[in-house]
Amino acid sequence: MRSNRLLGSALIEHNLVKFEDLEAANERLLEIATTGDLRHSRK
Image (cartoon, rainbow, N blue to C red; front, side, top):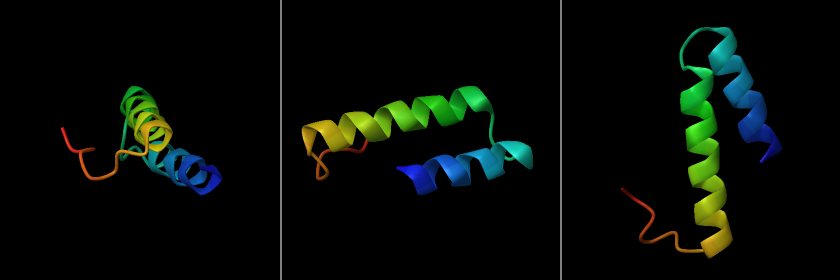
């Protein structure tokens, strides 16, 4: 998770993603990790 945050910070710093998009992706990642449902994680 820490490496994901570091990567996200770098992407924002270089204007490759918006903060809001990164937060949404992180929330989705936590949701998938919590449920453990990696096979059905695609939306």
